[in-house]
Length: 206
Image (cartoon, rainbow, N blue to C red; front, side):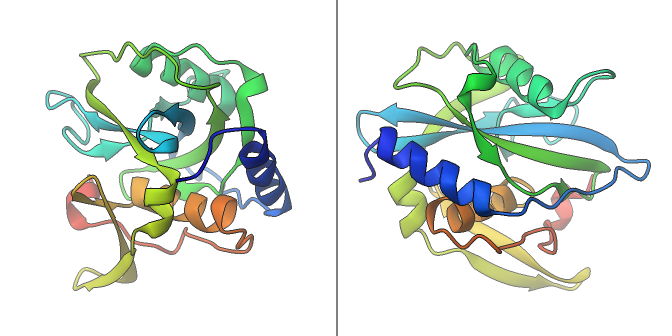
């Protein structure tokens, strides 16, 4: 089990600082921001928060996702990520929570997703929005390290589809790609790992 504390935060800050973040131009796509929110879990130690989207949402209903959403006009990605974390989880964080950034991930549904890693300061009280979030789960960072990602082929694409086996499910890109890069770059220190070549399953293309 990975302990939640200063040593972990410094390790993540260092690895993410050494990683040369890759940005993508929007090129008529919409901009979105997502957050890897790190908390202290009584059972799993240092953990990240993963959401199951509400079944009545218009886009990607019922899918696994990190808290996040569209960047509004005039917003920066960090502002959007912090706003979405507050709206979806009832968790108020500010820019002092930033640990670092991962690569942009262009989605098949017409977004460029910018991921930020946030330190939530222990075991915060959550108040998930029932309109957006069906459930919130903590995924231990040790569990993330110990899982065995797989890369499968599909007839619709020549790019590999990433699958992250977590919480008894296979988490696919885009969420799976962000989690995989966080695992490789922030936790394992493989600072040159890229994920924008990883494919999404067809059901996530819309």
